Image (cartoon, rainbow, N blue to C red; front, side, top):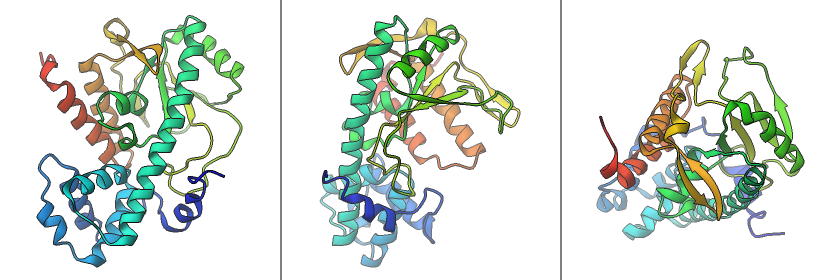
Length: 289
């Protein structure tokens, strides 16, 4: 048994679902955002009462910002009470372990798609964690998002099946009408043991093969797919060939995705931080015209 599997009872018993942010959450969220922002106030954090740290650290985990908060507190030499500090430290370590496993999974996927002659654009966390974050563990991930040309989706599905993935398929008109991916793939194995999807360290991540970047929700649609393949940037990721969106398409994709998170009533803190990291890392070369 790995040390990370020992975290599961702690997470199961103490970590809320992402929607279950503690009471007085605006105060805690404001303190978290102060800590991870561009100009954090260490003095303000040190003046927080001891009893605030338990709900604050729980809120950070619930909204996916615990690794960032942990590392920023370390750099500011701000020491929370022992229980909150342990909670954040364990969260960071779990994300580090989990993201290493995701990197191995993505390496296998990219190698298989390359061998099949299928170009693939790596999207969101699986890419950004390694390109715009100083430490991949700082960017929580729950799945692997990949963009294919629509004509390549059947071949990509066969590659996934050859790797042992099982597909779950839906129709375009089902539910909210989300059409950017109509199938998801997962290999049989251990599933999440925690109520918070950011914190499971068990099993492969779900793979979502996208045929477009269209965001949709009950008839509201925004599609930025046209032209993205022509502007895509080749790169080597985990020693495998892949593509990423251009800088400008990356920013636009993240912005539209964040807006739809708001429309769907989902938390958006991590998506906004992605945008901030892209602007911080690539902002000097963005073509704003």
